[in-house]
Length: 447
Image (cartoon, rainbow, N blue to C red; front, side, top):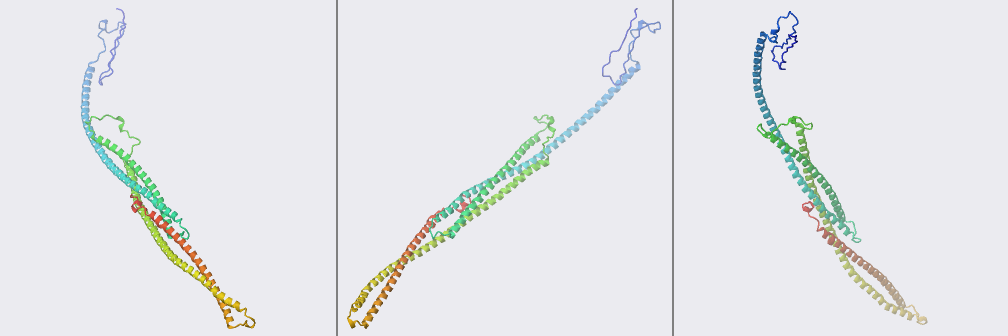
């Protein structure tokens, strides 16, 4: 038989080997080359790789031990799993209850702040409406104040048409100037107050919008948290959100969250109080300005009344003096006529006396004697000349007095016309125009 090289090996064992399994063995059947070989070729096929008996028992014991260890470990794991499942279930239940309780507390906090914001929004809205009404009153009062100013300026312009000597700066004009200045100052005050009210209304609305935005956010957050409190393990609309536990960088803290709303409420409350104070100020301004205008109107009317009485009295006195002057003019005219007649009446006696003297001056020779008759004729002539001179002087005085009376009559008539014109201006023009002076309610902006 030819020499043959035979190499016998065991099949490779699986990769997962039991812990106590005996190691594999490999035997090589070497080529028989000589006479010293212990076995012959007849037993060559039974000589393979085999375990020993001890190794077989050791392997069995190892299998028993491994099975026991695996069962023991499995029982421990089952027990620990049940215990862990129970503990985690209780923990999850407690955690969920605590989370639900905290979400409920958060709901209460959100509801409290939401209620505060809603109350502040309603109060701001009501306050803004009241301030709008006050602004409307201011605008009405501003429109109403135009009439007193117009009346005062028109009165001043009308009184400029007075004639001298009645064109004086009397107390009526001073009161009218005060009224015009007061009306202008009140208009400036009302305009400034309207601008202040407009600015306050804008601030009220801005803070109301800020509170409304905060309130809207809290309503949305409240609805979300309320929905979260209704979620249970049996809810069908829950699902996994793996990244929802990550904190947002822009997320607020409870302190900053509360401070955010508290600051909004504080600023809104501050503006609301400022609005209330402004409304009270507007009330005081409208009350004071309307009263001041009416008081000044009464003062002007009183001054007009006094001035009209003075003008009436002066006119009556002028009329009285004019009547007396007219009577005196008539008497003086008669006096002038009488003096002229008296002068004319003295012409005949003077002619007679002078004729007698002239005739007697023709007496002849010694008959031209300075007798008593001559002296009496001379004295008569002198007396007549003196009488004529006195009458002519008195006539000149009477004529001058008559001229003075005529001048006085013209002056009185002119003054009466001036007083009549002044009375017409003050009473028919100014006082009639002042009858349209606005009422106290209208000046206060109620109409």
